Length: 249
Length: 232
Image (cartoon, rainbow over all chains, first blue to last red; front, side, top):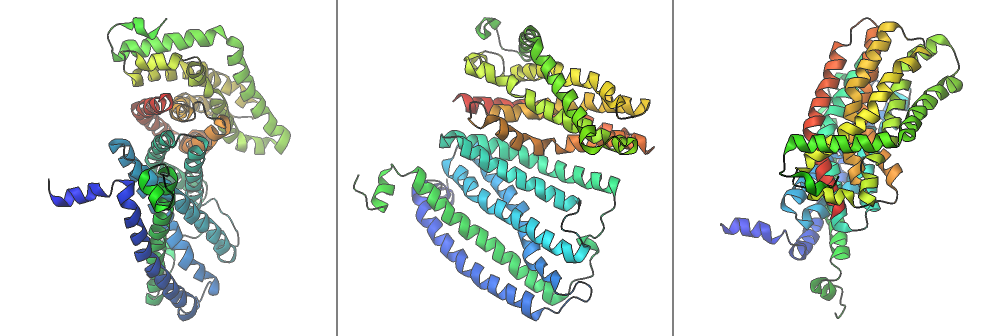
């Protein structure tokens, strides 16, 4: 076995992952803030006003990264859940638990900003567009995951039950997406679609990319902070957590 | 009828045993089955009272109403799958039997469908008649329900097993399972709509069948995993 592998397994233990999570959180929090500030400055100040939509289009600098992250985080969460079930690793389940609220938050942000953008752009807060509907169902999937965890008192049972749910959900997400898209095309064509939008100016694309990386780094940093809190809460009876808190056991 | 007296573990005898046992139990409490059908009929009846009796409107809403009511009726009957067996310890004995747990659970799901989805499919044309659907549309509604309701039972079994013994069980089950029912609702109601618009329902029925086959392959294993988690 190479030392490379051993190093990875070392961090599968909550006790050795705890300080690493703290360092990762710091490494990603600062770039997230800087990238976010640069992206907002480019997007809100530098980027020109859109000829058709006016200034309202600037919501996409929040909206699109949030929508991407909402779907991506669900996949990552399902991946951790699969690892927690196959290797029976506590830390994997803790990571999934730490990711879920951030994923739900991004889904909610994507839905709210989408509604606020839809009002000036399409004249309505809500249309039963395929993307919007599947995003709403994704929010329900996140909330179901969180509610199931909340309802189960034993953390290990909660880990495994929510992992099964996340995996069943992950199999269903593409089916739901395509069914909703197909249902939508049956009833009415999408009135406006992102892909049909005029080609984006380079500066807008730059702002969007900066905001995407900011959202990504923010998600990593926040997840690590939350994972540390979860580790401390669940390992509070162990010796290392006791010494960390300065409590004499 | 204990699970211990079953002999060597095998898939088909396991399915047959669980199916027979659950069917017998269900047929001994017939009133419960009747209540579920009444629930379906009442939910369907409430819609005209709410939206008015304009025939064109009712005809347009009918597939959706009948399917949403079927989803709710399925949801309502799901706790029956495992809850009683879990409460009196039978489920633990079933899990200890030499037969594979996914096979036993498949039998339970089949019995659940035969006592919930199947009767519902049979009465649905009668209820749909009140909404002015044509003869062919009634047929395709029933055909869609015939292909779709087993999938509801299969997916629902996973949710029912995950929420076993939890306090907020019922409402939580709805939150977990209804989003997963969305594709079935879309294809099922879409089939009737497609027949009405003259497109033919071949695509929808194929997709419902595909979902059913995928659920038959996957759901018993997920439900078995969830049952084992609940029994730990």
